[in-house]
Image (cartoon, rainbow over all chains, first blue to last red; front, side, top):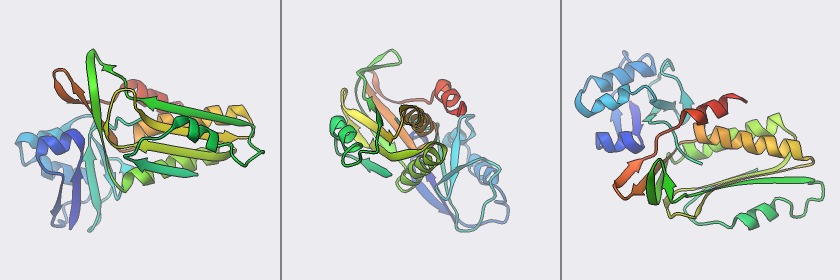
Length: 82
Length: 148
């Protein structure tokens, strides 16, 4: 199982703040999961944005980050705090 | 070292004074306060909502604080960031550093803010006269964080 969270503009565009996906062997890296979600089409195109940020188990990471069953993944636009 | 993420308002003066309280080894205190402006990117701003990633926010801020403490000799470090609904003129963020000498305090404060703006999971949604809009990240913030 993979827990996926979406924040801010992505959460609004997708109309969902989180979901659980069954673990697939094809999810070797975070980018494989992202491509799986992009393939849904329509609003999911936001996950193709150049400035997309992501986190694995609540730590910022790159799209080449390896995934493991049970991970908590988050996709979000560039952060704007402070 | 203190990390606080809260809805409640805070008193920047009280936060600054607390950094020196009961520690006569402190020779320098530097504080940064970020406020909600009433104007941004060509539009009047009537207020904003600050969204965050509960759990990761605290971890990300803690990591930034740890890194600052490794790079400079600090006596105290406080990071306070508000979430939820905020009005123009209200303080959003406080970073306060106490150290024996000023340079470490100045540099650490600058570093914490640069990292916070690019690595802590907060997002601002502004209310403008033309409706709400998400604030977009700025390249200048990324560049500022890269100098460390």
